[in-house]
Length: 215
Image 1 (cartoon, rainbow, N blue to C red):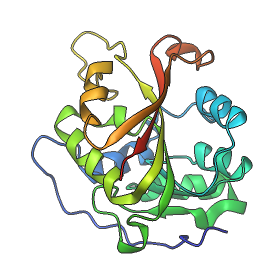
Image 2: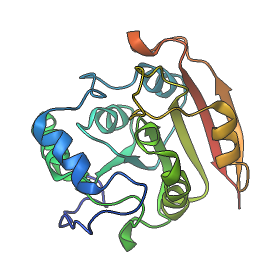
Image 3: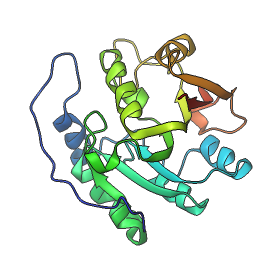
């Protein structure tokens, strides 16, 4: 069991300008509008963990139904999943009851003190692409607050998703230069490639980029 396993009350601080509010995500889980959930962990993430001996305390932000948390534990990581939607966390606990205490309700942008600066690894999958461009700086700050120095940010980044006419997202268009710029200061690229495996609708539109926090 993770030493960071605990339960947090869900607090809705109300809407913020130019952002998706916590209640929006909760509503999506309650109504079953979880189109990002493929019922299994990310194939590129699985392949990466198969090929690399990654260890340590691990955070999965925006963990949703918990597939990447289960994957991380399978490969020996002490993983904690964080999500702002209580219904999403409840679904993860139901799907993976043996890992229930690893799923935490909370806000990546304002992580509780016990989660600050303690993670050796952050696993990113679909959390970033679910945020509008105005919240990317908040995402970066959340990573900075939770990932220790010299820690790894292992990301399967959804690059430039195709959107229907008039649809602005989520997922939100996110280019490789955008990703580079977001972490240009304070992080070094360890690996960067187009994955060999992906979910069917994401072939050629994902990027595995691993970043190490400097310090």
